[in-house]
Length: 493
Image 1 (cartoon, helix red, strand yellow):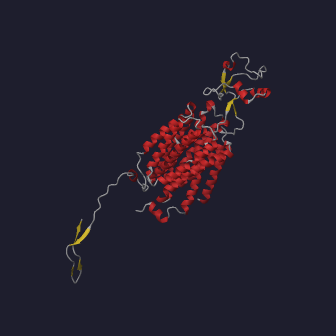
Image 2 (cartoon, one colour):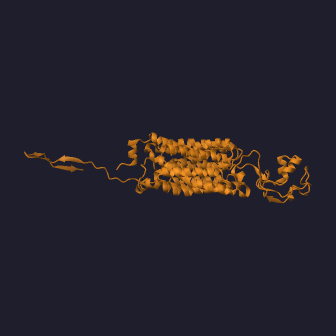
Image 3 (cartoon, helix red, strand yellow):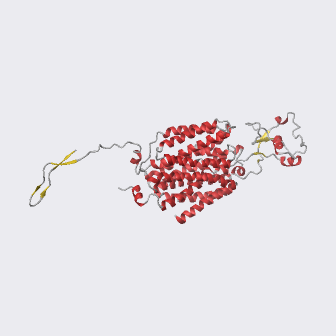
């Protein structure tokens, strides 16, 4: 019985129709990068400090500089005495008219050491020139900083739940219908995020985006690998993931010119709607951790993020060159091992050798991207057709569990030691690299269509030894007037 791959060989393995669908899918993949890692620009945290009632008037009256104001109103930071605290202030009534401009703390015998401290009950002052972000608008700093972690965790929780249900739905109702429906819901909820009136509504709409976005993207990823012939399958799979990297490279430029978070969110969502309209009228814990780390390492966040996207392009090229020569398992394992080793090395490079630290960190990003590219591709080869979407969604859900805990690992551990998250990511990468070596090699296999086909991947097929047959005539044919009698023959093995 002919398989679908046999039919594709006759109909065309990568014709005009497949190329058009592939182009549309690449557009959605590029836009998906914003949803997946765009929190870096939505949640930029500018320098901030406690607002002290009456200090603004006193500063204008006395002509204090900003540094003088901090010296009089803020205690030293508990982690770094050379900096001022962002979450505490001196508990002083600055509205009093008896305060001296030259030495406002002269009434204290031991200076500021005797002053009581209080939290930022009157809010915060954010540095002049900072653009609106969810951090500045919803005040996600100090005691409420965990809410920023929660926002990304809720998105990944949506990924976790949505990929399982949408994966099952795609196997039952079809990849295309599932993809179009999820894209529509993701776009509508994206508009709602842009106009969210409060933090609670922001969380709700982001979770809805997570519920429908990744499951739909996985459905269409599987669709394009099924629509093309086996010779083109690995190419379109890797090229589609390269579009995610291109999306990462474009995102910092868009965020640079549209820094306000609501404007950025609205722009990305409208682009999604444009794609959806076009399609309807014409007819498709380590990776995330390294990306989010860019928000806390200092330097130019736009340039760093762009470079982070650029290093993914060589990853795709390396995978394309190796995947059909050495197989899937070796690049998969080496990518994880490289990422783990680079994370550990980066953690212990002194900060004053910044260039080396950046090079090794980006090398680790290249490694984990190689692993991620191969992971998505190998998963499509391991499962039978009738379960492929659902099985890939379940595996992707495991990835989303990592996405849920990644913000907490990154930001909470970084508060203890800035490089502690890298040590955790490094150990995870090394363990994953070792476990990958236990997987079967899927190079050159035909996509399994049954559970039995999937179970036999990597196993040696036992075949009977080849047997040669030879016909030997025992005597000549005897002819009669009525008929011809064929000579007896013996089969010799």
